[in-house]
Length: 395
Ligand SMILES: *Cc1c(COP(=O)(O)O)cnc(C)c1O
Image (cartoon, rainbow, N blue to C red; front, side, top):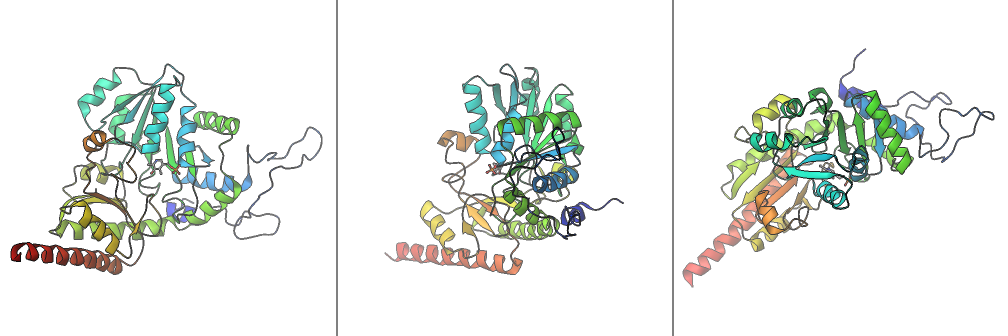
C-alpha cells in the first residue's frame, strides 16, 4: 500500500512497540545496550552509533525524501559538516553565492585551512555556472529557494549539467519533502535543518542528511558515528512529534503566505515582494515545475527609513522579531542587521539585501488575524508619516 507523504509522517513509528503495544514509539534514553551473550550484540549497542528513537525519525525522513537512508544530526550545521567529510583537500565545491550564512562560514573556514577548495557562484546565471563546471568540481551544493530573496534554481537542469562524477547536494530546509524532493530531481544527498519546518515548533535544533543510494548512505552513517554528531534521543523524539503534523502545517503555512504576499503586493507602502507564488517572481515557473507548493517564506521592501521601519516592526503584534523560520508562529526579521549581519555591506548589496528588506516566516495563525495585524501596523505608520508631512508643510 503506498501512502501519501503526509500520512507517512503522521504514522511514523506508530504501533511498532512490541513490548507493551504502545501506540506512539517510546523514548529510549539509554546510552548503551546489553549484549545477549559474549560475542552476540543486539541490534543496538551504543547510542552514538544507533538509537531506536532516532531511527524512527531517520526512517521517516528517508521515506519522505525517497532516499535509501537518513542520518539524523544534532543541528543543520552538523548535517552540512557531515557532508563535507566526503571531500578531499584537492576537491572543489561549487556553492551558491547566496547560500545560508552558516554554510558560507563553514565552507570558507574549511577551505582556508586546506580541507577543500570552494567557489561561490551565481548558479542562476547559466554562463557563470557552465564556466565553473569546467573547473571539474567534486561537489555541487544547491539551496533553493534561497535566503532571503527566494531565488529558485532548476535542480534537474543543474544536476544534468554537473553530471555523474559530481556529488550533488540540495539544502531543502526552506521547503520540506512534502513540497520538493531533490533526490527525485537528480540530487544524491539532501540536507535539512530540522530546526525549521520538519520540527516546526521552534523548540529543537536539529538536522538530517538523506542519501539516495545505499552506498553514499553507508559512508555518511559511518562518518556520523566516527565524528559523533548524531542527534540525541530526546531531540529525535520531539522532532518526530513535530513531523507528524507536517502535512497539515504546510497547507496552512502556504495558504497564509500566498494571501499575505498578494496583500503586500497590492499595498502602496510596499515596494517589492519576493515570493515564488507570485506570477511575476523570476523563479515562478521553475518553482511550479519542481515544487508542489511555494513555501511560506517571503520578503519585501518598503519605502520606510530605518526609524519608520523600527516603528512598523514594533507595532506588529503577531509577527515576532526573531531569526530562524519554519515554526508555527509568524516571525519577521531584518536580514541586514540580523540573519545576514556577518556579510559586509557590499556583499549584502550584491546579494540584494538592502537595509529596507524585511523577511517573514509566515506561521499558521488565522489568516484574518495576520492580515489585520499587518494592516493596523501599516495604518499606524501611514498616519504617523502623514502627521509628519503635515507638520513640515504647516511649519
Ligand atoms: C537554519 C539553516 C541551516 C542551519 O541549521 P541549524 O539547525 O541552525 O544548525 C542550514 N541551512 C539553511 C537553509 C537554514 O535555514
